[in-house]
Length: 318
Figure (cartoon, rainbow, N blue to C red):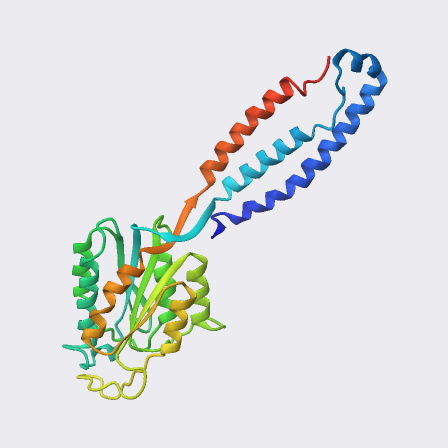
């Protein structure tokens, strides 16, 4: 459980709070000096039975709360916690590199993956949004988030192996995360691949950077490694000289560090068996509670309270 801010730049305005405290006591000192020139405090205290000039700590605290609430409201404060939910948005990333044409899955890896995604979509809640990415040497958005499951299934059925070489897992994660940025539901990503990350546009570790980006945007990633994690991949009908070995450690790292889960699928049956477990696991996700409107209302209420106090208990004497 933690707080996140949609517009963190506005948090710099919190520096105005110490200024408020300083000015409060400065004006209080000035008011007291003026009052000492003209007021008979002994007589006033006998009449009112109260201190005539107070430090107004209550008013100061109320004003601090008002400013704090307003700043946090415009900063877009949101509480994120991990809990049970029936409302999620999914992005499914499918590896379309040439090695996915291997026929150790029937009829091939990519066709088995497409069939799996179709079954997965059929079992999603009707309110769940789903989008699709394909990736090889680069990541491509095949379909944006939508609740129209039929459209997405048609898009998935038309995905073909890409002529571009390489496997850009990090790029797929970042592209999928960007698709989920505007979601107000649980944000989940399923990444299906038979290869290791071979493309890098970062000066540092691309996988580590993509994990940090997904985690900072509260996205849970479930990874599925297809085929083999050691040795040859078997027969490729068109690409005889290509080998593909996926990095199981990397897929485990992606899943573990984003709160998801890793699955190994060595054949069609093992692949098909994962979707029920994923759907069961995804009943828990990072859930947002926007606080901006609550903070704005709190600030408004405190303004009326302050107005009432300075008009009654802390009213200046004529």
